[in-house]
Length: 82
Image 1 (cartoon, one colour):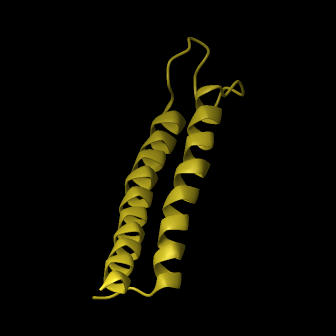
Image 2: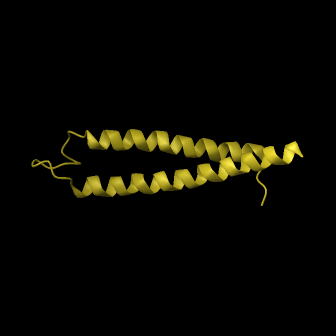
Image 3: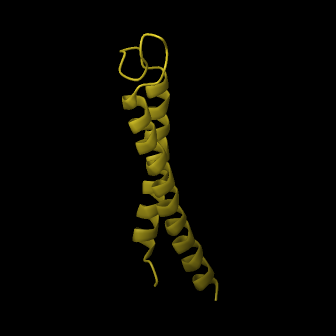
């Protein structure tokens, strides 16, 4: 399968955007003072674990999508050099 240049750039940008957004989210989750992420004793709550799992899965999917986009761009670059 051959990806076009715009699709490859979109996938790469989506992967980078995903990392930016979810790193910010995890940072904010970790610093959460509202009582949702950590209980009064400082222990993580179910809210924390569910959202951490969501963030980790989004990191993995964002990375996979970004790698596909990067590979598409590299393949187009190799093809144009021939």
